[in-house]
Image (tube, rainbow, N blue to C red; front, side, top):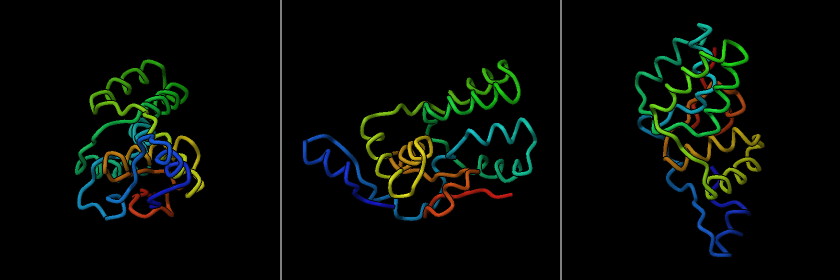
Length: 155
């Protein structure tokens, strides 16, 4: 993972706190965060083909928190694919893991990650949160497939 991007350097030059990812380049012995939870609840609700794999990661993981953006993504998907009532139940379940609010340092680090890995806004923010929490990112999203230390569950 990149340790220092141009925006991080610019922020530090102007005395703005930003963080680097020195510890994130080391492989994790255990999973700290099941990453893009937006896909996990959908797999569960639809009994998708990756449900068993998702459950295995959920069983051996400690989720350190859920980024606010993921709550939005989950609720949008569940509302459009299932129902608003089910979306509210899923949102309540996600809140039990704790909320990771977007800070300026996470946002600025996400910019560097987005540029380095050609990720969209949501993906780069989720990855930045995982790095900030020193947590393993586990996802169903193939956009992360080339990023070291990110686990992509495949069918």
